[in-house]
Length: 150
Image 1 (cartoon, one colour):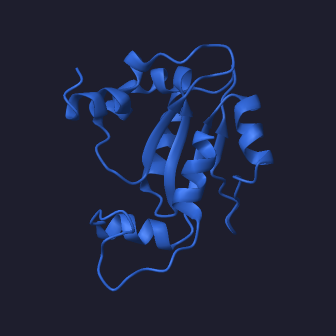
Image 2 (tube, one colour):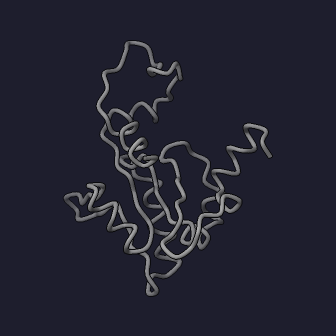
């Protein structure tokens, strides 16, 4: 349900009002407005089963240069490959959300902790074999700190 909400929120076409506020009274930055208007993508980094599930749901994309919006991480995938892919996704203007399995995020935690932009947003999800641990999720920790819950 949560992923369906994110997909609907970021990718549904909406008419924009003359002012820069969205329907919820939030003043959108230029980056956020551009991402919402341009039909942005979800980028995926995770194990084969997780990424395949998203691809079957229609989240896959390949551009004319054969660049994809996903990376399947297995035992042969190096940390350098994950880092390069993550940094590439953060620089792409067509990516609104980076969905990353938490066990993979732990391998590049130093990059995720330094990341400070709103778009693309980083969403850590549980991996197939490991449960989700909210205490390791950098973005969740930041939200709790901002809300005074920690």
